[in-house]
Image 1 (spheres, rainbow, N blue to C red):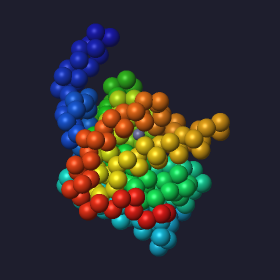
Image 2: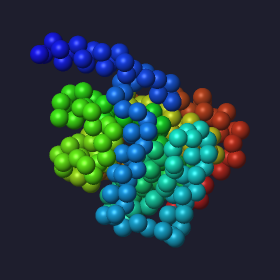
Image 3: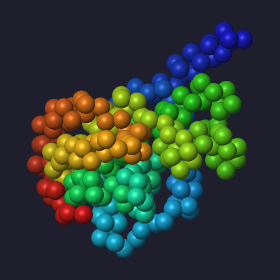
Image 4: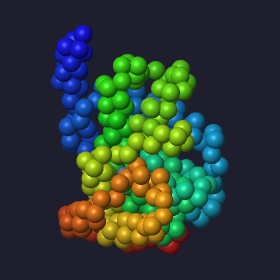
Length: 263
Ligand SMILES: [Zn+2]
């Protein structure tokens, strides 16, 4: 029996090694349209139970920055949305399909538009590289009860399965389960995010300052959820520094908004 399962998994692995839009090889049992559908469902569930902020200066900035990033992200299969959620928690996410949420608690760390573009670019990087789909696939491969769930709507799942899938997609905390992204996924999201912010016109050098502000402010306190799901390894800063010269030409060729307005 074990052998059969192993063979099946081997087969699935061979069958499902896909190249993501970011160009890296990934283990995917889900299709992009399944992921996007579930991302959309998860998004509307979260929005239903959250206080959405509209019409403030910051909420408009979230939308403006999001649209600028979407314009250079080159992902026609996404139906982008950018919402601001009232919450003390410094957090942000982008679900499959381009469903972005920024929590008001992260504004004081973002400080300016370029800081916010760092966060949003990073989150959008996770979605473009289909990290949610990859985590869902990993869960399905290791948990028989979840196998074949990709095409099922969230509303048709029992609450345990739903919690796991929501966490894999990147919206877990709402349901009490947090799945950190792997170091590989973090690095990849940093790389994609940095390129996106530079192309969108924001000074990529501010990314390093954002991560510095964020880790300093949360030092010695219980880490915010954003840091639990986005482990801030010591080498994140160094790696971003190394990458910046490579994206400066993109920034020079852009509308060059610098740091943008203060939040
Ligand atoms: Zn991340």
